Length: 428
Image (tube, rainbow, N blue to C red; front, side):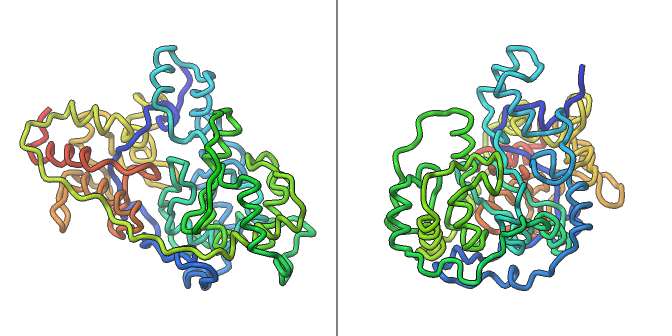
């Protein structure tokens, strides 16, 4: 039997996971920075973006390899990950029926396969994205694509490493594509709004905060290209932070000329119309985002909670993707156990009762319990789940890395279940 990493093997993806803290990181974990797109039209870029150092592309290239970015993203400039190690490719193979597994297992996996089927390629990043935005995003990932379940995980990097990676990803810019000093001079944002509606941009894109923007009827077809285009379409609220106006206009006019293979369609329009749309997207008045908060923490359950129930509803749903044993995973134990994506091996196996009881390995090589309580009284396992809820609300905890990494937070009822099980002495 061929070896396959756990991330690619198990496809019953939903909410769940637990584990790491800031001990895993080589750089400090930063709280979410304010974004210009949250402050309305014409707002200045965040200070963290404006003051970003240039970065070293050579160091960035080494970091991209070390962090195994090619296990999810194409277009990294690295050789493609082996098929059995490419998380997204494996999930695509499962969805397409190409994965070598029993028919019953394939059917069960496909019923729940919603995560990591589509991930943006990093190709031509220098022609599309601001370097300082990439750096800020790596340090404080947030939801850019509202119709994509997974988000960029908070990686074990600090500001210097983020600058190096951003410098590497934007190192190449196509010849002849100099940014004009006044790229949208003469463009009409009012005409751009009309064109936005007429061209059906809302079919795929959200534009949160822009008043009066009407989304067209949702696409009913679920062909591969249609699904990918919708899933990967960014919320245009972030466009003014992510892209230079001239690059945005060029992208709207002919996306494939900049990034071959992109699911973004080429909508017929003139260069002047593309500039009008870019003017609207980058200058439309945006209402402030409503303050976000994590869900309310539920009280402990009075009924008996067993390991079997917690395993069925939480651990085996998603936790085992990153925290398992190589024998179970048919390849590796995931970044939370045997290491990966820049994380050190922590030896945390959430696939068995005994594995959970054995805890994890700290930076000094000592075994630590995932049930030990932190300053706020929450068990370490619970603290990681709560931290992911806080991250989704824009409040990253410097001391704890939220779990599941880059996936939707576990719901309050599931966290209540885990916390109640621990409080009851972890009965089997």
